[in-house]
Image 1: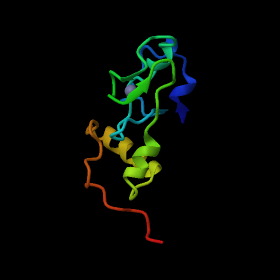
Image 2: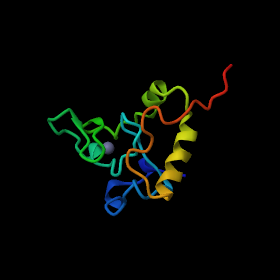
Image 3: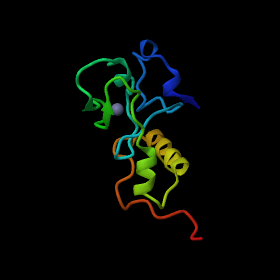
Image 4: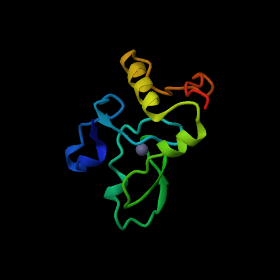
Length: 114
Ligand SMILES: [Zn+2]
């Protein structure tokens, strides 16, 4: 899978990662894919510091590539692996139900108990 981070912002103008599931995308604090994560890295030197991504609402830093909250999300959702989550997202997007992809509590724990 292509990573969004490998794509230059100037080549990303027509890309919407909410539909381009062949490209990996950073997740916000809710575990949702950011549709267009290339803005923060273009704001080098901007005097705004932390701000909310206008596309996904994640807290990001001006001048730093869009933060990816999938590790945080995984900690908050210990019952489901990131890869399982990603394939779940893809299945839902393919079924036309993308948006808030996994409501809290909807996904049962799939990780076998140790
Ligand atoms: Zn974003």
